[in-house]
Amino acid sequence: MIVYDRGGWLSMVLRVHGSSLPLIWPRILATTTTAAVFTYLQRYPAFHHSLTMAPFLITALPLGIILGFRNSSSYERFWEGRKLWGALVNASRSLLRQLDAFVVARVPEERAEAEALRRRAALRVIAFAYALRMHLRGETDRSELAPLLDADEIASLADEPSPPAALLHRLGAELREARERRWLRSRHAHVLEASVVTLTDVLGGCERIKATPTPVSYLIFIHRAVAFYCFLLPFGVADTVRSLTPVVVFFVSYALFSLDAIGEELDDPFRASQGTLPIATIARAIEIYARKRLGDEAPAPLAPVDGVLS
Image 1 (cartoon, rainbow, N blue to C red):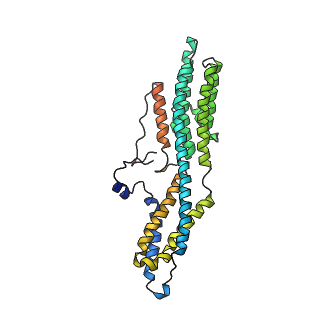
Image 2: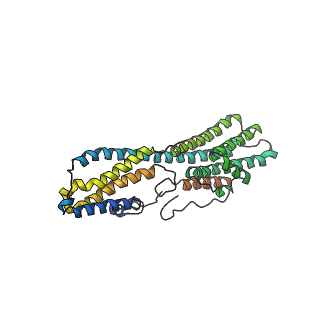
Image 3: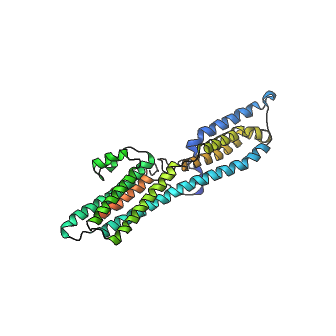
């Protein structure tokens, strides 16, 4: 996610960092160059070919509706991902508080063991947030989990289809142990279980978004329709704007290619990109909160790199 100061209207108009221009400038250059060559050849009767604007006016409306619908659905995926990670933050805080309040040994001799279980469970909540980020971004380096889990458990996650789900399963086993040893009362067990279920729902929602991309046939159609429209546009405007044809094509191409690129970027809100969700930053915030509750030294929040939070 890009961190920015809104500033004034003109600063946003002239801003390049964070815009889609770095992604689409080759396409704009190709269409504008094609329009410039077409305009130059128009002076020769053998190459003078043009159409009326009618086909372009007819196709502009449905093309705009399709692009708008695609961007709306992509933003809905982006916003749902943000709500899921917001729910993850809230559920993690609630679970950490509940562990501290409800998992208490009645026998003084067992208090150290109960404290150790609470600590393991709290560290597992942190590990879940990091494992979820790795799972969604396809990361295989699990070195960040080393301070949170033992080596054998980290190694076992490599064979799990969903490592975050495996961590929640083991968290549930620790809560069961606390209940069996009477460190967790029955009336409190369902409260902690509800928090774990919320984490499971967050995981399932994120996996659903990740595993259900926009159908490829739909993407191919949009890319082709935008490309055909921009490359054929000189045939429709050349007789009207003449030498300004490349200028018109430049602005129309910028608008359409930008809408196409924005929808494509928002389609996967979890990938490591400058315009997607800062899930690494959110996971670090969960660790900071948990470490402070445990009385440990908390790590520093992630800082933007070149104005981008990962």
